[in-house]
Image: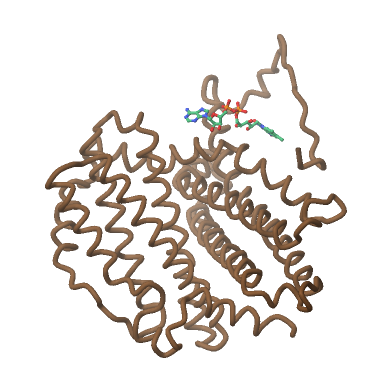
Length: 378
Ligand SMILES: Cc1cc2nc3c(=O)[nH]c(=O)nc-3n(C[C@H](O)[C@H](O)[C@H](O)COP(=O)(O)OP(=O)(O)OC[C@H]3O[C@@H](n4cnc5c(N)ncnc54)[C@H](O)[C@@H]3O)c2cc1C
């Protein structure tokens, strides 16, 4: 279907004798190295996806500024502007996820003495420490590229479907990323795996924490307003972590060791973790930009982060509701859902109320579109 620059062929190995000096590590342990290489492969796949995302945005923005319909460049139509805003937001968030993960792995590897005889084992351990993050990168990166490539084709209209236009190739090439390096389904099952294993072994006081959290959330006063830049988004990210713990604990309590077979619950927990990691990565980066560059220069980073955090929070709420409803029932479920509602009740549906009033009550998407238009030629 795609990636025609890469030759994909079956390779049959029959009665092959491997010289003993070619053995990968120790007898019976080669797969551990192979699996660990998959972690780095998954991370690098996300980085490759980011390259595709940027190319698709550049092609689509150029096309939208050239193509005239109804007497206007199509980039001037709000529905096309909204697409470009959302495509750029995914690029910013994915890049933030990648920078953060690269930094974490780099820091873990930095202490290794590469001259020591067990440098390989130490490196493998360091990389394995971030296996979950690598899977998150893989799923988030491949799905971001699919979204951007798809919207890119849409912006090109009929020409997007024609091979003379590069966006057609990007759309086809994008599709494999959700399949190789472990399908996104398999990666989703891996993402909450460690948490579930530790909780089941009693290494994580998940259930006790969840009960305390429920009480804390029920005491929240709704309708809180936020004044500082990204203050509301910081609060929502903290709330999202609590929601994740609540949903995770409910699933562990309901299914016990059988949770490993409950794929729908695991995938919902994985999606919460992915969105949480993505929103927090964007938030951390935007705050850094805000501190080092000031409000004016960091305006786009802040607008994209706001838009993304609010969208992601909505998704997390829906996923938690789904998980809680599957795991619990009766009065206990009603209490859990009431706590969930309280966690989200401080959300103002976009910017904090005070900020929304300052900007004439515009929704985040609208504000983002205006910024994008201001920075595009004409
Ligand atoms: C272009 C291309 C290049 C490739 N390059 C390489 C390479 O360089 N090295 C290499 O090793 N491999 C490579 N592969 C293979 C690739 O990694 C596999 O195709 C991929 O891992 C999926 O495995 P599968 O095709 O056997 O699908 P299956 O395992 O048959 O999966 C089919 C569907 O069932 C789902 N599924 C399977 N098991 C489960 C489960 N337990 N729970 C829930 N859902 C499940 C999958 O998510 C998928 O949707 C390549 C494949 C392609 C197409």
